[in-house]
Image 1 (cartoon, rainbow, N blue to C red):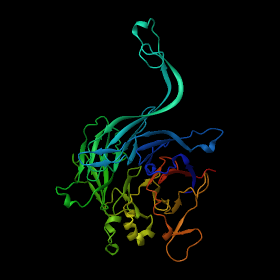
Image 2 (tube, rainbow, N blue to C red; image 1 turned 90 degrees about the vertical axis):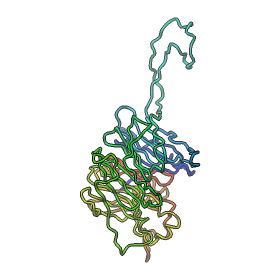
Image 3 (tube, one colour; image 1 turned 120 degrees about the vertical axis):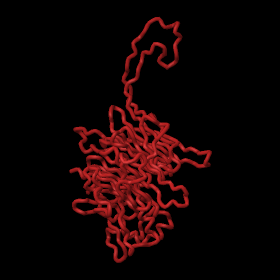
Length: 436
Protein backbone atom coordinates (compact mmCIF):
# COMPACT_ATOMS: atom_id res chain seq x y z
CA UNK A 1 0.00 0.00 0.00
CA UNK A 2 3.02 2.29 -0.09
CA UNK A 3 2.89 4.46 -3.13
CA UNK A 4 5.30 6.67 -4.96
CA UNK A 5 3.69 9.87 -6.20
CA UNK A 6 4.16 11.26 -9.67
CA UNK A 7 2.46 14.49 -10.49
CA UNK A 8 1.31 15.19 -14.03
CA UNK A 9 1.57 18.95 -14.32
CA UNK A 10 -0.02 19.15 -17.76
CA UNK A 11 -3.41 18.45 -16.22
CA UNK A 12 -3.20 21.21 -13.64
CA UNK A 13 -5.86 23.61 -14.89
CA UNK A 14 -7.70 26.50 -13.32
CA UNK A 15 -11.11 26.89 -14.94
CA UNK A 16 -14.25 24.97 -14.00
CA UNK A 17 -14.37 23.28 -17.40
CA UNK A 18 -11.06 21.58 -16.60
CA UNK A 19 -12.38 19.69 -13.58
CA UNK A 20 -11.80 15.97 -14.23
CA UNK A 21 -15.07 14.03 -14.27
CA UNK A 22 -13.91 10.49 -15.11
CA UNK A 23 -10.70 8.40 -15.20
CA UNK A 24 -10.25 5.02 -16.89
CA UNK A 25 -7.34 2.68 -17.75
CA UNK A 26 -7.61 0.60 -20.89
CA UNK A 27 -7.49 -3.22 -20.70
CA UNK A 28 -3.69 -3.40 -20.84
CA UNK A 29 -3.03 -0.38 -18.64
CA UNK A 30 -0.81 1.18 -21.32
CA UNK A 31 -3.29 4.00 -21.84
CA UNK A 32 -5.14 6.16 -19.34
CA UNK A 33 -8.07 8.35 -20.37
CA UNK A 34 -9.57 11.28 -18.49
CA UNK A 35 -12.70 13.25 -19.30
CA UNK A 36 -13.51 16.70 -17.98
CA UNK A 37 -16.41 19.11 -17.55
CA UNK A 38 -15.40 20.91 -20.74
CA UNK A 39 -16.17 17.82 -22.85
CA UNK A 40 -12.51 17.03 -23.55
CA UNK A 41 -10.85 13.62 -23.44
CA UNK A 42 -7.13 13.48 -22.65
CA UNK A 43 -5.33 10.16 -23.22
CA UNK A 44 -2.00 9.39 -21.56
CA UNK A 45 0.37 6.70 -22.78
CA UNK A 46 2.81 4.82 -20.59
CA UNK A 47 6.50 5.32 -21.28
CA UNK A 48 8.30 2.27 -22.63
CA UNK A 49 11.13 0.99 -20.45
CA UNK A 50 14.64 1.70 -21.69
CA UNK A 51 17.99 0.38 -20.52
CA UNK A 52 19.15 3.86 -19.64
CA UNK A 53 16.03 4.91 -17.77
CA UNK A 54 14.55 1.86 -16.08
CA UNK A 55 13.00 4.01 -13.36
CA UNK A 56 10.95 5.92 -15.93
CA UNK A 57 8.85 2.87 -16.65
CA UNK A 58 5.37 3.72 -15.45
CA UNK A 59 5.40 7.40 -16.27
CA UNK A 60 2.43 8.52 -18.34
CA UNK A 61 2.70 11.29 -20.91
CA UNK A 62 0.03 12.96 -23.04
CA UNK A 63 -0.77 10.81 -26.08
CA UNK A 64 -3.85 12.51 -27.52
CA UNK A 65 -6.33 15.25 -26.66
CA UNK A 66 -9.64 15.79 -28.41
CA UNK A 67 -13.01 17.46 -27.91
CA UNK A 68 -15.51 14.66 -27.41
CA UNK A 69 -18.73 16.58 -26.66
CA UNK A 70 -19.96 20.12 -27.21
CA UNK A 71 -22.65 21.98 -25.24
CA UNK A 72 -26.10 21.57 -26.79
CA UNK A 73 -29.56 23.01 -26.30
CA UNK A 74 -32.81 21.02 -26.39
CA UNK A 75 -35.25 23.52 -27.89
CA UNK A 76 -38.31 21.34 -27.27
CA UNK A 77 -37.63 21.20 -23.53
CA UNK A 78 -35.73 24.50 -23.22
CA UNK A 79 -32.94 22.53 -21.63
CA UNK A 80 -29.19 23.03 -21.79
CA UNK A 81 -27.21 19.81 -22.27
CA UNK A 82 -23.78 20.03 -20.68
CA UNK A 83 -20.69 18.84 -22.52
CA UNK A 84 -19.29 17.25 -19.34
CA UNK A 85 -17.96 13.71 -19.86
CA UNK A 86 -19.79 11.45 -17.39
CA UNK A 87 -18.06 8.16 -18.20
CA UNK A 88 -15.38 6.66 -20.44
CA UNK A 89 -15.15 2.94 -21.22
CA UNK A 90 -12.44 1.30 -23.32
CA UNK A 91 -13.03 -1.55 -25.76
CA UNK A 92 -10.44 -4.35 -25.93
CA UNK A 93 -7.85 -3.66 -28.59
CA UNK A 94 -8.42 -5.73 -31.75
CA UNK A 95 -5.90 -4.09 -34.09
CA UNK A 96 -3.46 -1.19 -34.13
CA UNK A 97 -6.20 1.32 -33.30
CA UNK A 98 -7.85 1.96 -29.93
CA UNK A 99 -11.59 2.38 -29.37
CA UNK A 100 -13.39 4.00 -26.46
CA UNK A 101 -16.91 5.06 -25.52
CA UNK A 102 -17.53 8.46 -23.98
CA UNK A 103 -20.83 9.92 -22.82
CA UNK A 104 -22.28 13.14 -21.54
CA UNK A 105 -25.82 13.42 -20.13
CA UNK A 106 -27.56 12.45 -23.38
CA UNK A 107 -25.22 11.18 -26.11
CA UNK A 108 -22.76 8.28 -26.27
CA UNK A 109 -19.95 8.39 -28.82
CA UNK A 110 -17.61 5.66 -30.06
CA UNK A 111 -14.14 7.07 -30.79
CA UNK A 112 -11.31 5.55 -32.79
CA UNK A 113 -7.81 6.63 -31.77
CA UNK A 114 -5.15 5.70 -34.31
CA UNK A 115 -1.56 6.55 -35.23
CA UNK A 116 -0.30 7.76 -38.58
CA UNK A 117 3.42 7.98 -39.38
CA UNK A 118 3.28 7.72 -43.19
CA UNK A 119 1.60 9.79 -45.86
CA UNK A 120 0.81 8.86 -49.47
CA UNK A 121 2.57 10.81 -52.24
CA UNK A 122 2.52 10.60 -56.01
CA UNK A 123 -1.18 10.94 -56.80
CA UNK A 124 -2.12 11.03 -60.46
CA UNK A 125 -5.22 13.21 -60.31
CA UNK A 126 -3.98 15.56 -57.55
CA UNK A 127 -0.85 17.65 -57.19
CA UNK A 128 1.28 17.67 -54.02
CA UNK A 129 -0.92 20.44 -52.54
CA UNK A 130 -4.04 18.34 -52.95
CA UNK A 131 -5.53 20.35 -55.84
CA UNK A 132 -7.14 18.46 -58.74
CA UNK A 133 -5.06 18.39 -61.91
CA UNK A 134 -6.36 18.88 -65.42
CA UNK A 135 -6.69 15.35 -66.91
CA UNK A 136 -5.47 16.72 -70.24
CA UNK A 137 -2.08 17.47 -68.69
CA UNK A 138 -1.60 13.93 -67.39
CA UNK A 139 0.61 12.03 -69.82
CA UNK A 140 2.08 9.37 -67.55
CA UNK A 141 0.81 7.27 -64.67
CA UNK A 142 2.62 7.16 -61.34
CA UNK A 143 2.47 4.57 -58.59
CA UNK A 144 1.67 6.33 -55.28
CA UNK A 145 4.17 5.67 -52.49
CA UNK A 146 4.09 6.04 -48.71
CA UNK A 147 6.60 8.49 -47.22
CA UNK A 148 7.56 8.65 -43.52
CA UNK A 149 6.17 11.59 -41.56
CA UNK A 150 6.08 12.75 -37.94
CA UNK A 151 3.87 10.55 -35.79
CA UNK A 152 0.34 11.93 -35.62
CA UNK A 153 -2.41 10.58 -33.35
CA UNK A 154 -5.91 11.01 -34.75
CA UNK A 155 -9.19 10.69 -32.87
CA UNK A 156 -12.25 10.23 -35.06
CA UNK A 157 -15.88 9.59 -34.02
CA UNK A 158 -17.04 6.30 -35.57
CA UNK A 159 -20.54 6.10 -34.07
CA UNK A 160 -22.88 8.54 -32.32
CA UNK A 161 -25.63 7.00 -30.19
CA UNK A 162 -28.17 9.73 -29.46
CA UNK A 163 -31.85 10.46 -28.74
CA UNK A 164 -32.47 7.42 -26.52
CA UNK A 165 -32.43 8.93 -23.01
CA UNK A 166 -34.95 11.30 -21.47
CA UNK A 167 -32.93 11.57 -18.27
CA UNK A 168 -29.22 11.99 -17.57
CA UNK A 169 -26.92 9.08 -18.42
CA UNK A 170 -25.00 7.98 -15.32
CA UNK A 171 -23.38 4.73 -16.54
CA UNK A 172 -22.15 2.96 -19.64
CA UNK A 173 -20.81 -0.59 -19.63
CA UNK A 174 -19.35 -2.71 -22.43
CA UNK A 175 -20.63 -6.28 -22.56
CA UNK A 176 -18.24 -9.22 -22.52
CA UNK A 177 -19.46 -10.22 -26.00
CA UNK A 178 -17.96 -6.90 -27.24
CA UNK A 179 -20.88 -6.55 -29.62
CA UNK A 180 -23.21 -4.68 -27.28
CA UNK A 181 -23.10 -2.18 -24.46
CA UNK A 182 -25.63 -0.60 -22.15
CA UNK A 183 -26.32 2.96 -21.08
CA UNK A 184 -28.27 3.77 -17.92
CA UNK A 185 -30.06 6.93 -16.84
CA UNK A 186 -32.15 7.67 -13.75
CA UNK A 187 -35.11 5.51 -14.78
CA UNK A 188 -34.13 3.37 -17.77
CA UNK A 189 -31.35 1.12 -19.06
CA UNK A 190 -30.87 0.68 -22.81
CA UNK A 191 -28.98 -2.05 -24.66
CA UNK A 192 -27.14 -1.00 -27.82
CA UNK A 193 -25.42 -2.84 -30.64
CA UNK A 194 -22.17 -1.17 -31.66
CA UNK A 195 -23.18 -1.32 -35.33
CA UNK A 196 -26.66 0.22 -34.88
CA UNK A 197 -26.92 3.86 -33.87
CA UNK A 198 -30.54 4.71 -34.61
CA UNK A 199 -32.20 2.32 -32.18
CA UNK A 200 -31.62 0.66 -28.83
CA UNK A 201 -33.48 -1.96 -26.80
CA UNK A 202 -34.94 -0.94 -23.45
CA UNK A 203 -34.05 -3.66 -20.91
CA UNK A 204 -35.00 -1.89 -17.65
CA UNK A 205 -37.74 0.69 -17.11
CA UNK A 206 -38.62 1.69 -13.55
CA UNK A 207 -40.56 4.82 -14.48
CA UNK A 208 -43.95 4.74 -12.69
CA UNK A 209 -47.16 5.59 -14.52
CA UNK A 210 -47.54 8.53 -12.16
CA UNK A 211 -44.26 10.34 -11.50
CA UNK A 212 -45.57 11.42 -8.10
CA UNK A 213 -45.22 7.78 -7.06
CA UNK A 214 -41.50 7.77 -7.88
CA UNK A 215 -39.56 6.42 -4.88
CA UNK A 216 -36.14 5.51 -6.28
CA UNK A 217 -33.85 6.09 -9.24
CA UNK A 218 -31.09 4.07 -10.92
CA UNK A 219 -27.66 5.31 -9.81
CA UNK A 220 -25.19 2.93 -11.55
CA UNK A 221 -25.15 -0.18 -13.75
CA UNK A 222 -22.55 -2.65 -14.98
CA UNK A 223 -22.32 -5.86 -17.02
CA UNK A 224 -20.87 -9.03 -15.55
CA UNK A 225 -17.21 -9.36 -16.70
CA UNK A 226 -17.68 -12.90 -18.10
CA UNK A 227 -21.41 -13.65 -18.56
CA UNK A 228 -22.89 -11.53 -21.33
CA UNK A 229 -26.46 -12.13 -20.14
CA UNK A 230 -26.00 -10.80 -16.60
CA UNK A 231 -25.82 -7.25 -15.27
CA UNK A 232 -26.46 -5.35 -12.05
CA UNK A 233 -27.85 -1.94 -11.28
CA UNK A 234 -28.02 -0.02 -8.02
CA UNK A 235 -30.60 2.39 -6.72
CA UNK A 236 -30.91 5.47 -4.54
CA UNK A 237 -32.56 3.27 -1.90
CA UNK A 238 -29.33 1.35 -1.32
CA UNK A 239 -30.45 -1.80 -3.13
CA UNK A 240 -28.76 -3.80 -5.89
CA UNK A 241 -30.61 -5.84 -8.49
CA UNK A 242 -28.99 -8.63 -10.50
CA UNK A 243 -30.76 -9.24 -13.80
CA UNK A 244 -30.56 -12.05 -16.35
CA UNK A 245 -31.47 -11.15 -19.94
CA UNK A 246 -32.23 -14.81 -20.67
CA UNK A 247 -35.18 -14.76 -18.29
CA UNK A 248 -37.10 -11.94 -19.94
CA UNK A 249 -36.65 -9.34 -22.65
CA UNK A 250 -37.61 -6.59 -20.21
CA UNK A 251 -35.61 -7.11 -17.02
CA UNK A 252 -37.97 -5.28 -14.67
CA UNK A 253 -38.08 -8.46 -12.60
CA UNK A 254 -34.71 -9.06 -11.07
CA UNK A 255 -33.05 -12.44 -10.56
CA UNK A 256 -31.43 -11.48 -7.26
CA UNK A 257 -32.03 -8.59 -4.88
CA UNK A 258 -29.26 -7.43 -2.55
CA UNK A 259 -30.22 -5.31 0.44
CA UNK A 260 -28.89 -4.94 3.96
CA UNK A 261 -31.60 -4.53 6.63
CA UNK A 262 -31.35 -1.16 8.34
CA UNK A 263 -30.61 -1.01 12.04
CA UNK A 264 -33.55 0.91 13.56
CA UNK A 265 -31.27 2.35 16.25
CA UNK A 266 -29.20 4.14 13.57
CA UNK A 267 -32.25 5.61 11.82
CA UNK A 268 -32.02 9.36 11.23
CA UNK A 269 -33.19 12.12 8.90
CA UNK A 270 -30.18 11.45 6.66
CA UNK A 271 -30.44 7.64 6.56
CA UNK A 272 -32.08 7.48 3.15
CA UNK A 273 -29.66 9.96 1.58
CA UNK A 274 -26.47 8.32 2.82
CA UNK A 275 -27.70 4.83 1.91
CA UNK A 276 -27.96 5.78 -1.78
CA UNK A 277 -25.39 3.80 -3.80
CA UNK A 278 -23.16 6.00 -5.95
CA UNK A 279 -21.14 3.26 -7.66
CA UNK A 280 -21.33 -0.49 -8.28
CA UNK A 281 -18.48 -2.64 -9.65
CA UNK A 282 -18.12 -6.35 -10.36
CA UNK A 283 -14.86 -7.91 -9.21
CA UNK A 284 -12.56 -9.11 -12.01
CA UNK A 285 -13.43 -12.69 -11.06
CA UNK A 286 -17.15 -11.95 -11.34
CA UNK A 287 -17.84 -13.52 -7.94
CA UNK A 288 -18.34 -10.30 -5.95
CA UNK A 289 -20.00 -6.92 -6.26
CA UNK A 290 -18.62 -3.80 -4.63
CA UNK A 291 -20.88 -0.85 -3.82
CA UNK A 292 -20.10 2.61 -2.50
CA UNK A 293 -22.55 4.67 -0.49
CA UNK A 294 -21.79 7.94 1.27
CA UNK A 295 -20.01 6.55 4.32
CA UNK A 296 -19.06 2.96 3.45
CA UNK A 297 -17.81 0.52 0.84
CA UNK A 298 -19.50 -2.89 0.87
CA UNK A 299 -18.54 -6.16 -0.79
CA UNK A 300 -21.34 -8.56 -1.67
CA UNK A 301 -21.11 -12.24 -2.60
CA UNK A 302 -23.35 -13.05 -5.56
CA UNK A 303 -24.57 -16.09 -3.64
CA UNK A 304 -25.68 -14.14 -0.54
CA UNK A 305 -28.34 -11.49 -0.94
CA UNK A 306 -29.34 -10.60 2.64
CA UNK A 307 -26.18 -8.77 3.72
CA UNK A 308 -22.68 -7.85 2.50
CA UNK A 309 -19.77 -10.10 3.44
CA UNK A 310 -17.52 -7.07 4.07
CA UNK A 311 -18.21 -3.48 5.13
CA UNK A 312 -15.49 -0.82 5.24
CA UNK A 313 -15.95 2.56 6.90
CA UNK A 314 -14.54 5.22 4.59
CA UNK A 315 -15.00 8.32 6.74
CA UNK A 316 -17.18 7.42 9.69
CA UNK A 317 -15.96 10.55 11.47
CA UNK A 318 -18.32 12.53 9.20
CA UNK A 319 -21.40 10.96 10.76
CA UNK A 320 -21.60 13.84 13.25
CA UNK A 321 -21.20 16.35 10.40
CA UNK A 322 -24.11 15.19 8.24
CA UNK A 323 -26.20 18.26 8.98
CA UNK A 324 -23.59 20.72 7.68
CA UNK A 325 -22.76 18.36 4.77
CA UNK A 326 -26.45 18.42 3.85
CA UNK A 327 -26.51 22.21 3.94
CA UNK A 328 -23.52 22.56 1.60
CA UNK A 329 -24.80 19.72 -0.68
CA UNK A 330 -21.69 17.59 -0.11
CA UNK A 331 -23.91 14.77 1.15
CA UNK A 332 -25.02 14.26 -2.47
CA UNK A 333 -21.45 13.73 -3.77
CA UNK A 334 -21.08 10.58 -5.84
CA UNK A 335 -17.86 8.76 -4.92
CA UNK A 336 -16.60 5.91 -7.10
CA UNK A 337 -14.79 2.75 -6.00
CA UNK A 338 -12.34 0.41 -7.78
CA UNK A 339 -10.76 -3.03 -7.37
CA UNK A 340 -7.09 -3.77 -7.86
CA UNK A 341 -6.17 -6.35 -10.50
CA UNK A 342 -6.37 -9.33 -8.12
CA UNK A 343 -9.53 -8.17 -6.27
CA UNK A 344 -7.56 -8.16 -3.00
CA UNK A 345 -7.49 -4.39 -2.39
CA UNK A 346 -10.22 -1.81 -2.94
CA UNK A 347 -9.89 1.94 -3.22
CA UNK A 348 -12.25 4.88 -2.94
CA UNK A 349 -12.05 8.63 -2.40
CA UNK A 350 -12.90 11.02 0.41
CA UNK A 351 -12.58 14.73 1.27
CA UNK A 352 -9.50 16.89 1.81
CA UNK A 353 -7.98 15.11 -1.22
CA UNK A 354 -7.80 11.91 0.87
CA UNK A 355 -8.29 8.49 -0.67
CA UNK A 356 -8.67 5.21 1.16
CA UNK A 357 -7.33 1.71 0.49
CA UNK A 358 -8.63 -1.44 2.16
CA UNK A 359 -6.75 -4.74 2.05
CA UNK A 360 -9.36 -7.51 2.07
CA UNK A 361 -6.91 -10.19 3.22
CA UNK A 362 -5.17 -8.45 6.11
CA UNK A 363 -8.10 -6.09 6.92
CA UNK A 364 -5.59 -3.25 7.08
CA UNK A 365 -6.52 0.13 5.69
CA UNK A 366 -4.65 3.32 4.92
CA UNK A 367 -5.55 6.93 4.23
CA UNK A 368 -3.35 8.75 1.70
CA UNK A 369 -3.44 12.31 0.42
CA UNK A 370 -3.09 13.51 -3.15
CA UNK A 371 -1.83 17.07 -3.03
CA UNK A 372 0.95 19.09 -4.59
CA UNK A 373 1.98 20.57 -1.28
CA UNK A 374 2.63 17.26 0.47
CA UNK A 375 4.04 15.30 -2.44
CA UNK A 376 7.12 15.48 -4.56
CA UNK A 377 7.88 13.13 -7.46
CA UNK A 378 9.19 9.77 -6.25
CA UNK A 379 8.52 10.64 -2.59
CA UNK A 380 6.82 8.07 -0.38
CA UNK A 381 3.34 9.11 0.68
CA UNK A 382 2.79 9.21 4.41
CA UNK A 383 -0.43 7.75 5.81
CA UNK A 384 -2.81 10.40 7.13
CA UNK A 385 -5.09 10.15 10.16
CA UNK A 386 -8.14 12.18 11.10
CA UNK A 387 -8.67 13.10 14.74
CA UNK A 388 -12.19 13.27 16.17
CA UNK A 389 -12.28 15.38 19.35
CA UNK A 390 -9.81 15.17 22.23
CA UNK A 391 -6.13 15.84 21.85
CA UNK A 392 -4.70 15.92 18.36
CA UNK A 393 -1.34 14.34 17.64
CA UNK A 394 1.28 16.04 15.52
CA UNK A 395 0.65 14.00 12.38
CA UNK A 396 -3.15 14.01 12.67
CA UNK A 397 -5.65 16.39 11.11
CA UNK A 398 -8.78 17.52 12.92
CA UNK A 399 -12.13 16.63 11.38
CA UNK A 400 -13.11 20.29 11.78
CA UNK A 401 -10.28 21.44 9.53
CA UNK A 402 -11.05 19.13 6.57
CA UNK A 403 -11.53 20.93 3.26
CA UNK A 404 -14.79 19.67 1.73
CA UNK A 405 -14.17 21.51 -1.52
CA UNK A 406 -11.23 19.17 -2.17
CA UNK A 407 -12.76 15.79 -2.94
CA UNK A 408 -11.61 12.70 -4.78
CA UNK A 409 -14.62 11.30 -6.61
CA UNK A 410 -12.90 9.51 -9.50
CA UNK A 411 -10.14 6.91 -9.30
CA UNK A 412 -8.79 4.09 -11.48
CA UNK A 413 -6.53 1.09 -10.89
CA UNK A 414 -4.16 -0.43 -13.45
CA UNK A 415 -5.60 -3.84 -14.50
CA UNK A 416 -2.48 -5.83 -13.59
CA UNK A 417 -0.01 -3.63 -11.69
CA UNK A 418 -0.11 -1.51 -8.55
CA UNK A 419 -0.49 1.77 -10.38
CA UNK A 420 -3.42 4.03 -9.59
CA UNK A 421 -4.79 7.25 -11.04
CA UNK A 422 -6.50 9.75 -8.75
CA UNK A 423 -8.44 12.78 -9.98
CA UNK A 424 -8.35 15.58 -7.42
CA UNK A 425 -10.63 18.28 -8.85
CA UNK A 426 -8.56 19.59 -11.80
CA UNK A 427 -5.33 17.72 -11.03
CA UNK A 428 -4.46 14.18 -12.03
CA UNK A 429 -2.07 12.17 -9.86
CA UNK A 430 -0.51 8.83 -10.69
CA UNK A 431 0.85 6.68 -7.87
CA UNK A 432 2.74 3.44 -8.08
CA UNK A 433 4.32 0.92 -5.74
CA UNK A 434 7.62 1.91 -4.29
CA UNK A 435 10.39 1.03 -6.75
CA UNK A 436 13.65 0.03 -5.05
